[in-house]
Amino acid sequence: QSVLTQPPSASGTPGQRVTISCSGSSSNIGSNYVYWYQQLPGTAPKLLIYRSDQRPSGVPDRFSGSKSGTSASLAISGLRSEDEADYYCAAWDDSLSGRVFGGGTKLTVL
Amino acid sequence: EVQLVESGGGLVKPGGSLRLSCAASGFTLGNAWMTWVRQAPGKGLEWVGRIRSRADGGTADYAASVKDRFTISRDDSINTLYLQINSLKTEDTAVYYCTAPNWNIGIDSWGQGTLVTVSS
Image 1 (cartoon, each protein chain N blue to C red):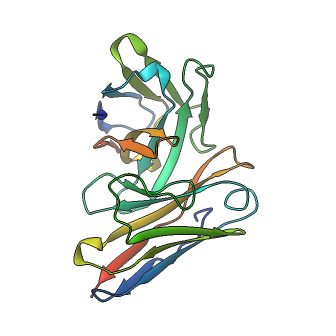
Image 2 (image 1 turned 90 degrees about the horizontal axis):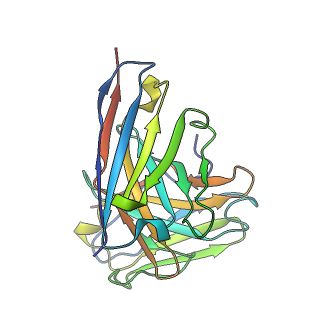
């Protein structure tokens, strides 16, 4: 059972906009930044969003992050087949004094 | 360019020990906060722990699930991070990644991971 809750799956067709949610609590998302990672099969995770809504250099602007209260979202617009991957949210948890991850969302591009 | 290369994984019996290494290049390890993250086969990511930079005290924090069994250390002279794992349990079976986050410039570099399998 993950501290951060994500839907196990999401899907969309090419060109569509998809949103993945991440729900937490006041001790994690409610008081700290949220981070999003993309993991392609057989590879290490790659940082997509940091500090809730910032994109690292090289990440397409099709990817965007937002946070409101104790929830966060990752939006992917102009969906492409290469976006098919697992997506994880993460945040620091003040109560646990550690970083916590969501259980991951498997995105399928139909 | 930042590069992280993990090694030291393998097959170990329950109760055994293992030391994982993470060779860093492209930056000065002693100046960085480093973390270990693991991923059990077919499962999600789990934060294992972190070690602060030398300037920030060099101390480590651990997830509750590994505290007292795992130890993070580093040898700055050879730019290498370590994860000592003792009293291994079957549930420690996972790919172990070292990471080098630098949120000020929006970077979180990951190694390719090393697989630890705990089985009798």
